[in-house]
Length: 244
Length: 244
Image 1 (tube, each protein chain N blue to C red):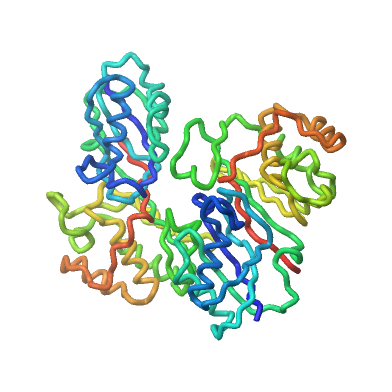
Image 2: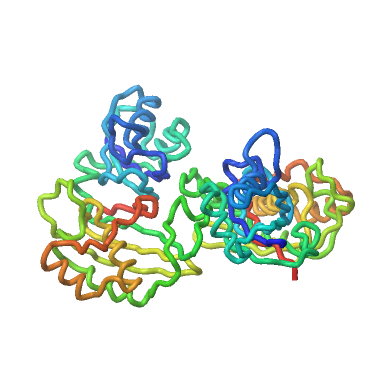
């Protein structure tokens, strides 16, 4: 049977989702856990990779097993052998035609910042400090430009394997609450580092270092202005992958 | 001059606030930082100890220095040499009669739990998992009993050095939001493990394992019912100390 799982992880001590030679990956931890439970060497396919340091609340993945453990209880079995920084929050049997990677229709990421002149150790693990002199209204104005279908060539890092750089952003919201700002972005897919670069652009806009005209120009030319920084991985969290 | 500082720390990797032989303490990290900045060996006095694993957003402390660094800028200097898990968020000059420990009038702690059948790695560092079948209204009802001036002998661990076990709880609120519950408790002082034991009682009440009558009886007899657990340190955070 094919099993669909939902996975939460603290990305701090991982080299990322994908199996790599140079350290712990989320994928390999889950594959090891499946082996411990079933004795089977399986490939666990995720909705997509997440980079080193990126967290997930709702990564989705699938694998095939001939185990007699009921799919709906698989998550409990896996959690008994998984390390504390990765846990499976749900599991269910799904059609053998389902593919967690190629069938993903929408993904939602959050990026978290906190406004403070000094680092706060309680916030540093899952968000990034930004100086408080930032104009949220300007960020919201800039966010409007990113919504919809665009060629995001200017807003990705090199190294991705994407065939096209056209993507659709269904929503990009900015939620402000007591000194914390959360960017919530939902799209049909994201290029390499795209969310972290878009959020870097929004922060630059909020700091009045970047105008909406410069963002529009970047879309037209496909070239990213040098002052748009890729924000650190630790502020990013994959919230969900949807299959409709 | 005497300098008052406000300190935030992630308690995970500390043996607690107080200097001890067996590991890193917050107090010694700050004393080392003051030494690096001023060359002076000072004693940093906190509003009170926090135990191993307990966090702080607003611990208050004082120390004396003859440094020429202006008090209002001391926090910035200290932060350049402090480790990532402890930072000073504010500093100011204060009367030499001020004592961060003996003059503290009120302290506010939060205790955080999240409701889930499975562990969530993103919540495990600063909160404690509780099964979702919990009755928040019953917890709120039980919380009423703790408010006010009482002899809290039944709600402390042995080992404290307190002269009296009478304390006043000014407020004890239960804030519920999307699967997370935060207990916010403000009092004139707390006995050893008192907040963690009170929150353990509230959870037991919410799980219908403890009646309000049993809590009232514990106050009268000074004996704690065995089923009231001391909740883990990691859910506890010292939010502030007030001096009025």
